[in-house]
Image (tube, rainbow, N blue to C red; front, side, top):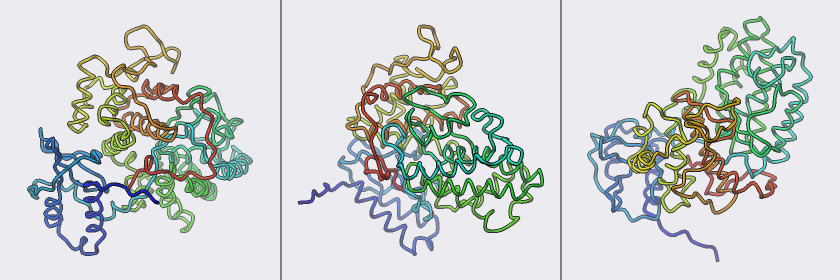
Length: 453
């Protein structure tokens, strides 16, 4: 007999609002009317928290201190009642437009544990081999020169850059074949160690730079070849949900170059080209490009994913606060970006002197942990709450979400993520380091790792 999931008030409310937004009549409603409809469907939990399922098909939590609505996954399974909230005080940014409810679902899982499918890796290897045969004179390396040797053609960098840009969280097993196939082209060993490679997420500007340089040099055919390599790589990555949302977004940006000759020939400046690409991205995929267009929103969504990935914990906000405590926040701006539950848990750690445990360091030599001095890197987790995912897939989801938060924080504030990961992430890695890699013919996620639209 098939198990039936127990009824949940948040799931029920979510389904009702999804149906309303999907109704063609929603688009005909004025913003005040949409706010009025939503205001009658706000949920209140026994602790007084008010919850709204709104923009980006995500839950928002009302902050009683200042009236803001902040992204936050709800406490599913908790009793709640429906109340009426003043529609006039619902800000526009929490009202669904409609297109934002059609975002592509993805996964928060890192590439630590669950392998990339062999078929995907093989297709990338074939594309990479063909790209490596190009001449560096025709395709000079104008970006990613910190990764690749000077005699590597930019077509190879286009494959790498696409993989890293499309990854939700580019943290990989040290022996992940999708990464090791690049070995002969690398300038130096990748960040991390033999178990985990904590790789940087490149900005879209780096990909645009490869193409724009060829346009400036009067080589439009070479520029088209680079765009085609990016499109081919993104097309291959679509089969893995850890890449899919951003791969789709990138395809919508670069494919018009291939279909309409000369459409970007005037965009010889990389920033101009980047902006042209971003304008092509449809509204339903805009969340995949927040790292480029709205770093603050990108960070908020990453924190949402982290708390959601931790829903196995007795108190997900408290568990998330332990991982957030690793972020460097010398200016004290982080608490104001958190919902009041997270903020309360984080402030408790801060008062105990347990925040900034990893990322405020200066390391010697570059990127390696230094123990036993003030401000040095600590690879030990804060001794306040043990995070114990129930299985390897859940661990990979937390690792991916936590690393994505670290990268998003860096994009927002300029803080650097240590080459061997933040302390909480390193502690989770040590828990699964003895387990063999999983074998996957495809990467289909269970509900505990999905990012729902």
